[in-house]
Length: 398
Image 1: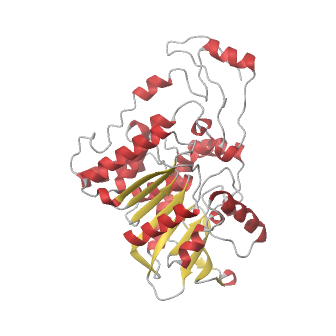
Image 2: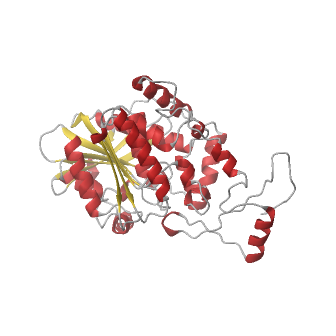
Image 3: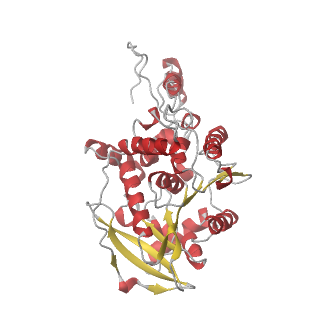
């Protein structure tokens, strides 16, 4: 791309694209040769597609609606105010379309201690969405988990990353490879069902049955949503809330004992759903929590765009940081795990975010309901020992 050096009253408009940034799970970034790098330095631009005045933009982010900073001093009133502000920036309206669930008897199958089903429902008025539903053997109502899949720059599977497909050998091969890579070979949903939880997993837009998109198509897809007056991330948020409500409303489920659980982008979705939904009694988020300012640094994956659009609500940062949004769920039980070697989230960002979260839960005299932990030696993964800790934690809080 061209790099002009002409100055305007607002400063240089120099940008570079993607130098030094790595895509999620190792996708290759675009490099720059020595002459290009020299030209970029001469123009005063910075690495990672940031404008050269990005420190000034960061300084303007004060998060004035955060609990403790906001002039609203009653916590319940603050929660309503903050949630309303988040919803305002979703650019996607609430939808009360009847779910009208359809269960495919031809895909029903028994497994070790639970039943597998395929269910198709309307999360919005726009389309029907197919999900995988697991129900423990025995007499309900049971506790339940809404399982939210990750991004991973892998789009051929979504829900199958967490629930083992039973009638699709092609997806099974891809799903098993993903489980081996991220989850110690385990399917998290199947393990939860064996332990007595109803499990629901659905594809986000662009994954599995609702895609697949390619990595390079993501920005165009998100831009087209914006041009149509909507939002890719906003749609995802609204659908996750609707999925939680559907799950809580099933006769087989104890609606007071519904949790949201996710890894990576799914972790973001889990705490976001808890913040926006009263149906979620607890949430476990593995490998997605940070301060915004601390993650917006040269070389970080989020600066590449693409996957960032799935978690981008334009303008919301003028009001709330990521941990501020998650705090809307307080004082309900929440768990956050981070791998100390996870390069996607700088240690300082995790430290800042965890500190903000702890301050909110302590202010509600509920510090024991919040668990924040950094796992030494681990990267961007959800290992079997971590899973076992999450399962035990769910048993204790639901």
